[in-house]
Image 1 (tube, rainbow, N blue to C red):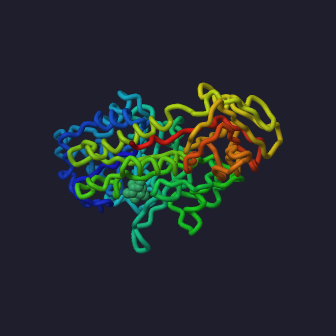
Image 2: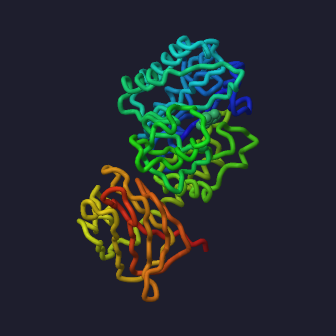
Image 3: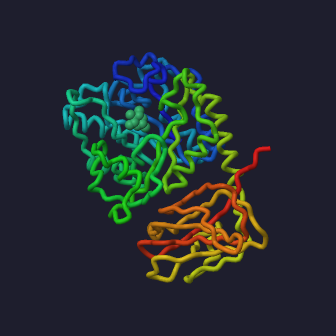
Length: 430
Ligand code: FUL
């Protein structure tokens, strides 16, 4: 879960200009445990907080600037949102992550080269050093200065080096990685073809602007040299920050499910933004949508309808492992093969409309095309066709009833390996 929170929450803006008074920041009912409990209850694994957005206002009592929480009326200037956030996440067993905007519209050093880079590194060190172990650090490539604005070259090697040194286990997010890559849009949609690998020359650094960037990030590259899976960031509301005027524009559970299929179901990670209100709480409309979305997922993925089926394959070892969700065993086609199939025969016909496929990605991502056929009226009928699989591929189609299905790998760049095949049925509304 992404958590966007700053002075914008009080001004109604999406991008603050840095002139906002810290006095306007007063989320008098702030309860980070309510955020974390909601996230936990609804199946999220970690949370990422905007410790500083483009307006430069810091949600922790930084030594680097007075443009921070210390000069706000909240908790008489003695509070620390970052601390309360990290503590609340840990209390719920959630991973902790921070967003620290490189673009800073408040500090005078922005645009002065090294002076700003030093300032930024000090802020980063405060966040990396004082709040325990982090799972992810998020670097935004956005910059709205325009051609006549300030120009600041960020010292990316130094920034990434600081994270690696102080938080070696944290994943680094950026347009160009180096840990996970931006998925290339803010709609929460990975490409229908989505490789975890990228060619770093196509998107060399964060904020790099070229016509091919969105497609390159959405799709990745089967022959790319770097393993940088996609992360799809998107908001539950039209804006990233809470605005009262958008309380009735929260995405529905069905819409969130669509996003899930287009992100998680296309070999990406979903980073869903849920912004706290000016009181400092997640709004009830957002919470309700998240609960319904969780319930929908829980119901849909409750049990694999293929369990109990006989499994055979074109060749290779342990095909039945794809029905065993308890471990990391998988079916592997004979070494060096570039295609293959795996077939399931159930004792009775099954009606299904969702399919989940997973590759054993600890060995890399290789499958380029796949097809699913069902045995009907004495012949194979194609149910769905797609390209990449990766960590997960979710497909949805008109309900199909069959007792025999076959998943074919049409082409793979290296030996195909499937970790899991599962079949589900969407709940029927009565
Ligand atoms: C963008 C920013 O400009 C938005 O305000 C938001 O933080 C989004 C996640 O990234 O680049």
